[in-house]
Length: 256
Image (spheres, rainbow, N blue to C red):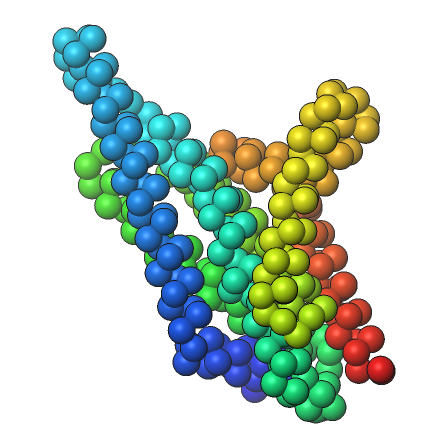
């Protein structure tokens, strides 16, 4: 077993013996299910109205009426829930005074940071995987295009991966889990609001640069079924940047 695998195994064990992963998972799946039910109900009402107007069977686009709205709404849910999922990673180690033992172990800082991040990312992937049940059930009753759904899920995975990396960084800078969650939430909300600031500059170089910094535009394109290399580069580079900053914070603690 490699050092990273050892850290992942340890973190997963800690997650699954504590209530946090079950509570966060239950809330995440409940909200996803409720949003799906609401958007499906809205699509059904639209179909009934069209049937009354046309006097016959109506064709509705579930991709636009249900899944696009569903994925767009999930970014708000991720913004609130994922900081809670990551807040304990380093903060709990500091609070329990086990952080020093971790740093003096044979593990490298790289192994610690990557192992902790991958463990929480695997939990998130598991939760996202469970939500595939919704389109799978709807497929039994209606026809729709799966390609925009897969790109929507890709967007949700990439957005969640970025949010988790910010949460890992926030947890590394404090020993208080609540403070870590608020730092993560504040950073993510600030980057979200930057999109509005970019809109004030319009279609100018400054406006495009500022808008690029926000994840809103990149995520929205994936939700619409568009895969652009610049969007993939944005998420991957943002993730790497946050993990690098986390590495620097942990490394600086070792030499204090």
